Image (cartoon, rainbow, N blue to C red; front, side):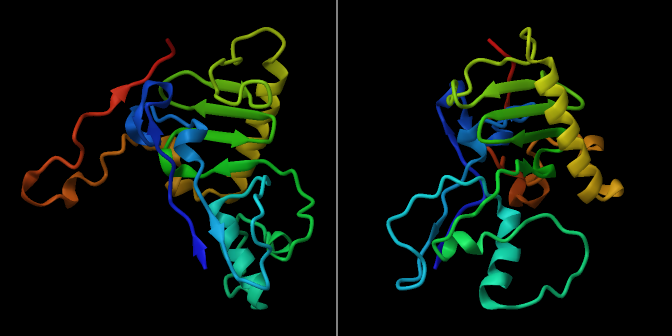
Length: 203
């Protein structure tokens, strides 16, 4: 049994009520992008164990195929890596960054255990957080002295990853995404959101 979700939710965190696209430009706080995931198979998957590894939704496909011993039919270069070792109680042995894909258009993020870097290609400020010393992401170090090379290195890793996996015709950097994609699907002209998104800027 696998229980998971598609996004987190700011419940007043950072002064925001809503998920990543509850603000404009979209926010990438952990409270918005981290999701719950529970895996249970008694007698096979270790129970009562909390995983602290960095994983992403696109790791599920290679993991489940690996777990049941199937080869992927699609041989394209796809993101994701199997975490079947964790399901079997073994060491994962990886500290690769977790990337959030083009969900929020021109807002992209790269996260490691220590750092989170948010890059906005069209609107808004870039962000850099030291997650070990500032887990609540309250101090943006992007403009602070001594952190320029860290931001530069993380941006390079982020862009290299997207160059590898992004379809140029669907590149989120070219899309103005505001979280209003559902409007045309609402019957009777009803508003899909109780309130308009708020423009978020540093306070």
